[in-house]
Image: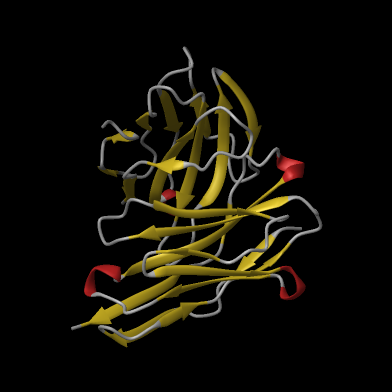
Length: 114
Length: 116
């Protein structure tokens, strides 16, 4: 049983550096989502893909953030010129066909910006 | 605007006690879905249940039960005979038809601590 996987699980970086995270969804799922979760808060929606198309982006996703899903399979989330406020858990989720299928989450990537 | 409120930040119970986690939501849509997720210490969100806005029937799954009341915009979650393994943060979430049900809006979560 392969669920949603994310890599790396932890990332420590210095302010100003670029970081990239990867998410591999459940293989038959065509929708992929990114969320951000800070300490003591619920996850906040960042963006989502249907196949390779990025269909919605939150205002939380500043110009320093970019997400891709080039072949409709795995996705990457890049943060350029990281800031301390970017420190958070970045969660990826996927869901199958159908407009209301539940989203299955990966273990997350915890980013710490020093 | 959509919003989910979980007023209980943390609840502590002793094993075998029943516990209810409250969830109140706000939405302008008449068509929406409500969810509960569990986040154990390992960090991975685990899907527990999805209900649509047209189905107000309560649901029971083992020790878990859910009470959906549109009149009070609430979707409460009860764990019967709690166990230590139930210790986790529980999130209530909402998705609406105007976002194609693709965006989950989460509450701030309730941390449940079950002691032996």
